[in-house]
Length: 116
Image 1 (cartoon, helix red, strand yellow):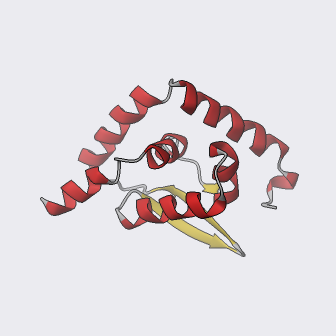
Image 2 (tube, rainbow, N blue to C red):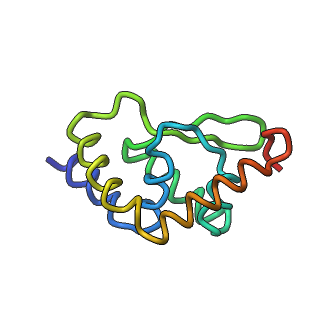
């Protein structure tokens, strides 16, 4: 029961919800990509990504200086269903649409796909 309560508590933050909406499509993103999308500093984005990883939402991979994050592929079906419901409700909000637009523009502009 505690694990489930902690899992849902991890959703109780706007920044973490915005990150989950961006990562929901299944792609892996570098911290620098997510910083640009959310217009937040690296320390804030990294702290929330680490929190989500610690609570079972994300997996991370280091490449040089940068960390790359994606949703855990084998997410528990209960949690996956809850995430799908939340993302469906949030994806079309102005803030999430703006995040997606900034992320898309940033990824298109990135120098050869490498982090700066």
